[in-house]
Amino acid sequence: MVRVNGSSRSTTFRSSSRLEASLFSSDVANPGVINITVRTPAPGGGNSNSVALAIGDPAPVSAPTPFINDINPRVVATGSALVNLTISGFNFEANAVALVNGWLRPTTFVNSSRLIVLILASDLAQPGLLKIRVANPGPEAATSSEITLDVRNPNPIPRIASINPETVITGGPDFTLTVIGTGFVNGSTVYVGQASRATTFVSGAELRTRITSQDIAREGTISITAQNAAPGGGISKPVSLVINGPNPLSLSAPRIASLPPNPVAEGSAPFKLTVEGFNFVNGSVVLVNGNRRAATFVGEGKLAAQILASDVARIASLNVQVVNPDGMSSIGRTLEVKKRNPIPRIASITPETVNAGSGSFTLIVSGSNFLTGSLVRVNRQNRTPTFIGGGELRLSVSSGDIASEGTISIAVVNPAPGGGTSNTVILTVVAPTGL
Image (cartoon, rainbow, N blue to C red; front, side):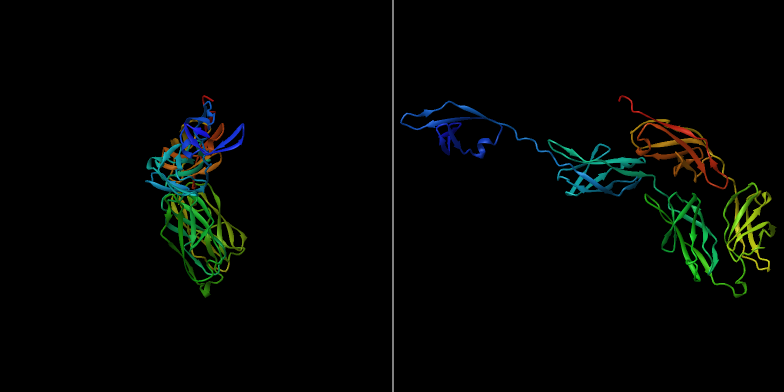
């Protein structure tokens, strides 16, 4: 009979050198040592010597590695209050936790493929990229790869002040619509009715898009709006593009759709103004405030007019018309002459040197002649900064920009009219110290 700490256990005899005994689960419930002996019954018999059986701690079980597929939202506005971030993936344990830039954040387990983490207001105080990870705790903890939450300065709500042209005639060709206003950003979208259109960002005060002949095939009005994407952002109040039916007496009259470039800077040198529209003929002339200007017939829908330096010597709204040889005249369109934007100048940037792989940060650009529509050019790529004043811009630089050693060229670009590109300064990316 096999005995455990002096208590008999059910025993099976296999041979004179082998016995098998059934132990209770309570025998091995806790780490430690139990004594094993064998008792042989009378006649004769007796108790054998004692052999120790060590009961050790159970082997640690590795937690499964969690995987992140996506987060929602992906972009959050700087200065936001608490944000509930949904993390989607798989292998999330019931006690899984989320880390934001390495710091634990309150985490709610929904199921093995979904967590909700509370992003604190302090996490969102500055623009940049937050590194999000998920960890399954345990003796052998496992951590996911990272995904980034983009914290950006909120976009303004755009406002449309006017469009050019404001009125067109049915049956005209495609033309460029100029949208003038405030609060436009690189990425703003113009909507024609309910349809978004490919939009050219000119500056914080000007967008351009194409209006098709199908858009103006019938009389009526079309709602024109501008939208800025999140974070922040929103949709402007609409303005109307009026589509009038043709006057039977003026079916052959020339009509102006757009006047690129518009606006132009006061004090500009003589230049060629493109007049886009329809019913132009070889021999059409262009009038600027009633004064004839040399014009070249490019095609039925385009003229090139020579604008004199005296036309744009001062700030003004110039009336431009086209007159055909038969005397038929277009409705006037306005060419705006505005104050020339200055060329910006960079005095310094802060910081001037960063460590490779050190994460996103805010670059402060100090100088002069900065405008609300100024852009910061990072290695030839224009980006929209936060305008602090005429002497300061701030730009969020991502961790991807400084992932490796090297130099990054920084310049500021002011929009037309006038404007231009500043001097270039260098942001140096160095190897982290102590490696």
